[in-house]
Length: 205
Image (cartoon, rainbow, N blue to C red):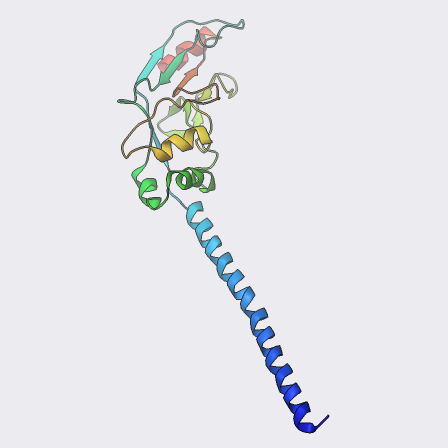
């Protein structure tokens, strides 16, 4: 093979090698860019502000005490609070969360509940607490769900809650969330009726 032919072949292989190297180098750059974008979006959603504000419109007190047998929890309670009209109570999106997700469609906004650090797996609970110490609920013996504390709704990032809230109009309150879950109405009850002294102390406090 003549030297000029060898040079042409060598030059051709060098050019092909450069093209392949260039292509191989370009792919990770694109992947890295996409990964950076995804991480940025995930970081933004993680830092979203508190999404929900709640308002109750009714509280009731039942003075029955020394009830130690199993009774219908729907019928007997010490305190019951709820939102029975969407005009005066319920849940609504905070203006800060609505502003932070103003370019989201309802599906994306609902999904952001779970991706947000402060909103994911959040409960709307009812309990009695001291204004001087919000961290410690008032209890009779030990903290029991359904007695000293109760969730008024399923987790707020659940589809049945986040979906309607994400699609709601600004300022609108929702007090009923239709779906397969047992608890649909914004309502919770506390029960201190086992001992008269605990009932009395609870009323006093």
